[in-house]
Image (cartoon, rainbow, N blue to C red):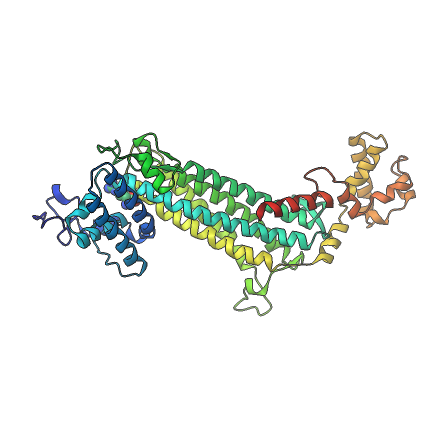
Length: 469
Ligand code: ARG
């Protein structure tokens, strides 16, 4: 039941919007609707935004200097209370915005009720999320940079290590192990680009959009934007309170990043298996079996691979939430935060643990070299040799294919062949044909930009190292 208010402050259980209501909110509804357990994480940004809004109101002569000062002091006091975990949250607080406003009025009296002039929670929450993401994406970019550095460190330490490159998970052509690692550094570089794009698009002040139509007060939006470090103000109030593109973009960029992590994880699982034995994962990043004493399991990369599904899930949940929503604000939008926060937490944790795991990787160069030296990975080199002697590539490919089949039948490798053997397949083979049959030579011949030749890999490594410091 809506009761008469004592000046400014709320009776227990009363809502700030309770004026037109005759019944108290049902306790089930209160629990169902509350976003406080999730969005209390935004408190610092909420207070930062409120302080800037308050200064905007003062400059527009909506608040006096005294009023603005009292409100700002109150807000700073609340920030300290929440920092110190002394803030008295109440069950009727719908969200962090209401909790802070209620507390403000209790602390400084009716003047606290002036803060929300010319503002709605709709533009307020849009602001809080942007402020939060600006920090969170900054932290994530730094984590991604450290991860790239871990990859570069391993690449630098193993510049002379060769390995089989695969397609279809079949041995294809030899490559440098460093080339393989740098492939992941490139992927993470693009991930960082996507996060930076998101940052540049969310760099707009939503305050001033009000609930949906704009504000009646002559607040200088550009001034408030400058206070909060935004480059621009949003251009359409309806769009401003409806828009969650920047959250979806973040989830999309995080999903792609996790997809890259998942692929690397899969390779780590394969490479550390007894079937491959290319690498050993650090003991500290593996777990044992409760039954089989000999087991050392690659649970960390497995779980990263597993958590990728969870991040995709958040992306699809929010896309689905937004689909079919009419303009402008609808309460459905409250679902954005849980998805966003969990995706960010998941990716942050994965970044940290995978960075350390990569740093601690032991690389078995002999096993990698053995694998690169068998399995006919040099067949393409022989075909290209024939091309150099004027044989059309298709014919050279066919001839070399027959040669490989003959080797398979006689259980020989290409390096077991003599010149006489080769000449039984083509008279174009001469003495120098045997020279192309080395792993190192095959790698060195991939000398174009982007190829696996040592000088190209080293140049790219150097460029990335420079870009990351
Ligand atoms: N807690 C809401 C959210 O996170 C913000 C409040 C807007 N609520 C409203 N009824 N207009 O989206």
